[in-house]
Image 1 (cartoon, rainbow, N blue to C red):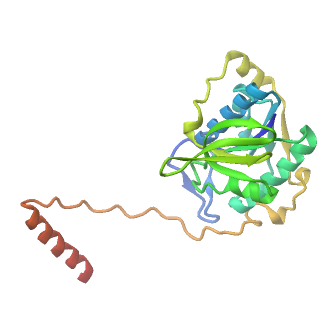
Image 2: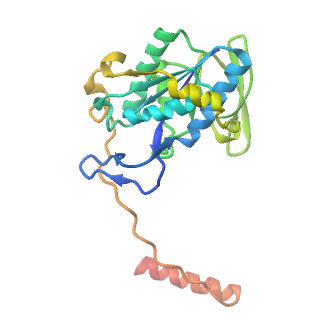
Image 3: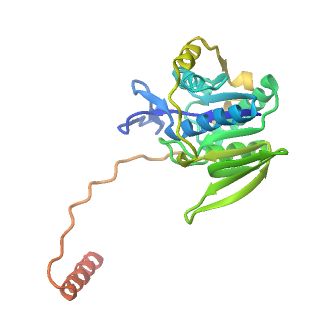
Length: 265
């Protein structure tokens, strides 16, 4: 079973800075980690390989330092690491990012053979949109299952999974190949073994540019984005609230007066 895992390197800190000209994150000088949700996708990909055989190829789009994220994935058991890096990709929204990854995945299929599943974390901790995974499936015209908490069975080119919902979970069956986004309830990511860490250090990371994956600069990055961040600002600090004292009826009357004052004031 051949699996592609899409991951992202994100800032470790929540105290990020914004470029006032492009309204994008300033990543220079900020320590980065593998997106926490993607760690579960990596682990699930490796577990599927251990159950069914095959290969796990991990791919990320980012600056050259994103190679570290790929090496971490390899230390956990992934077989190949692909870095999609080009200045043309900078500033891309979820539309442009999923478009870029779609073309990278097509090239991966050409280089390493057909794949059975694409795994992604449910969302990235820096953007929190949960749009890139579904966007990839749309570009590739593949079935998708989001918020997967358990892969119950894979048989006869079909997968039966549990999909988390607000009320519990659904049992969904999908033909393969398919894209799945996973939640943290699906597994517990392993700690890399010494052998895995040694292997990751010597592993060859393949690097592809926009030209390598067959996309034009105008269609990716900031130029290819369909959305634009007009303004980013920090919400004003809210003033402290007021604790209402007394009997319930008194509290209600006071609350009504306060609400009237806010409406008319």
